[in-house]
Length: 147
Image (cartoon, rainbow, N blue to C red; front, side, top):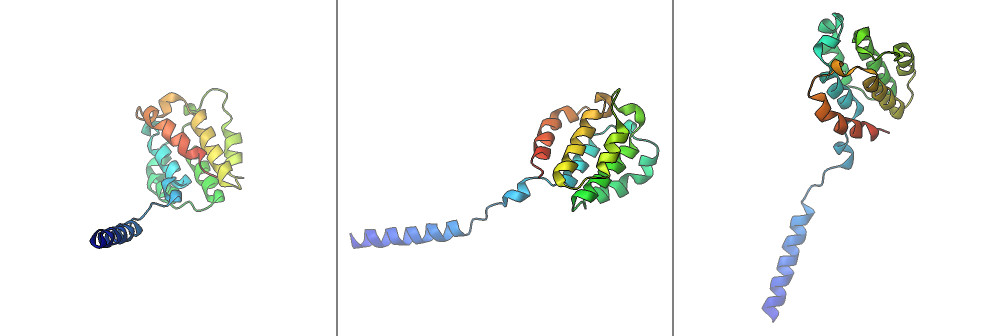
């Protein structure tokens, strides 16, 4: 009986020590940042949807998108992306200038996420690569988590 008790104490100690070493992921890292979402979105836009200036500006743009740290920089980056898109890639009646104005006056991450969502909704389906339809729902869900 005494040896059974000692065995249980040792097993309990070992399992407690083992569980204490398990690293749990941080919940904030599970949510992609807006910079990551801007990059994912940009990579799903058909290369033919961009103006000729995109060729020279692409790497700089993607580098800046990955470094977004606040709402103002997010808005400016999205505004820059809008500027690289051909006017014919927007849906009929979509007010690009209004979206640009909004992007340039963003104050919160939630507003920046809304501008990005509006941009996605304002583009014609042919502006995207065929793989976008399979990624869109997950991307929108992640975008909705931006606060």
